[in-house]
Each structure stands twice: as C-alpha cells, then as structure tokens.
Length: 115
Length: 111
Image (cartoon, rainbow over all chains, first blue to last red; front, side):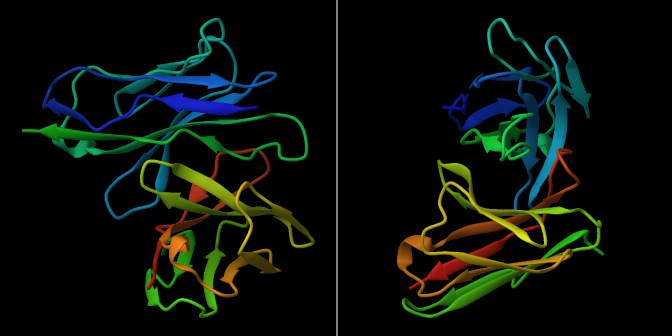
C-alpha cells in the first residue's frame, strides 16, 4: 500500500546546526510530496511541497528535493533556530483514484533546538 | 480570524457520552477532512467530504460519524465516547487537490 516513513525523533540540535530529517515513501504512480510543520499548540501548516521528480520545494530556509530514484523527500536546513522547534510531518497525496488529494502522513519527527 | 475554526478547543467528558466537534471554514474550499492525532502515530484520516453531498470513510471511521451541513461546515460526532478516542482532532480543508489547510485542533479527553 501507499505509505510514508520518516525518521523517528526526537531530534535535538544546537542553534545554527545543520538539520536533516529523512523521509521515504511507497506509492504507486507519481505522488505529490509535502512537508508540514506543527508548532506547539497549533495545527499543521504547509512548509513546502514538490509535485514531480527532481522538483525542489523551499520555504523559510528549509529545502527538500523529490527523488524518484530513491523514493525520498528529505528535509534540510543549513542553520536551525530555536524558533524551528516543532513537529515535522512528511506526507504524500496521490493524483488518481477516488481518494485523490487525500494526505497520507508519516508519524512525525519532533525537533528541539537549544540556544 | 482563523480560516478554519474548530470548536471546542478542549473538551473533557465521560465514557458513553455523545460528543460533537464542529469545524467551519471561510476559505470557500470544497473539500473538508477530519483527522485524529495520537503520539507516535501521526495523523490518521477519519472521514472526508469532497462536497456537501459526498461523504467518505477514511482509515479509522469506526465509532465516528460526520455531517456536512453546508459547504463551510463539517461536524464530527462520537455517538458513545470511549477512552481510546482520547486524542487531538484536526479539521482540514482544501480546494480540489491543492494543499490542505488545518484548524488549530480540539483536544478531547474521555474519562
């Protein structure tokens, strides 16, 4: 079936450290890929997305590249800040079928950034 | 004002009670969704609606029901709440296949 696997947390980094959160997927066809972020006490917000192979999504210093050959969409940021502390979810949608557009989520990775 | 509003934000109730969680949106989106979030499990889809006359079960619909009263309103009901339905519930909306927009969630505790 279709699924998303992301690295387990929690991840604890010092401010200005480099961040990578791994995400791989299993899907038939060509899914769209997303990273959502959930700040404490809030709902999920779209962070970035990519809709086809080799697309790079970017926002707020975060980047992720859609790698079809490795079925991956790893999230990276060169220098994290305390304000980046949140839970990050990788997700996909399928462009076909009765449930097209429905999100399939990974389990989330909690990031804590220390000053 | 929030684009996707969930009420209540917090609710504590007892086993066996009927609970309704409400969601309203001002975005004019056609699609609405209900998810639950549990620690370590991510978000799981309960029900979704592609328009007012279209309601579909998601991954974990047992024990839940929904009503799409209008394009802007989508409510989730627990007919007889049980403790393992204690979770954080999120409503989301989207326009077609575009990215979903989430409310701030309802924290539900069932004793």
